[in-house]
Length: 113
Image 1 (cartoon, rainbow, N blue to C red):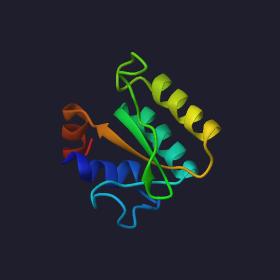
Image 2 (image 1 turned 120 degrees about the vertical axis):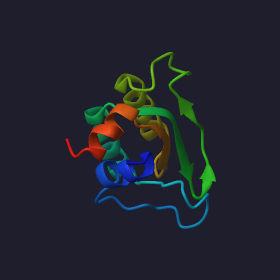
Image 3 (image 1 turned 30 degrees about the vertical axis):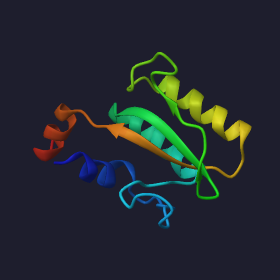
Image 4 (image 1 turned 60 degrees about the vertical axis):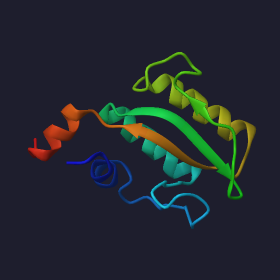
């Protein structure tokens, strides 16, 4: 199983992609509530999040990454804190992120375990 397929089936399922063409087609953006769901699912599966990239009215907003917080990409403390900061400072953001699904998790899913 490929990373994009895993994310679509297990992380983005039942959520609405808000990218209407303002960014690259393969980058998905989600509402605040949907992104909160994504973060919970990422934590559940142990998926790494390298960066959170919010957008406001189709324009890039500030970016926050695990390196900025001196945490591992899989540490949910950094991405929960960054998300809370974004949503507190600026209302109306939509969110995208860069993810890393481990080879071990992808292999397990491919085997149907």
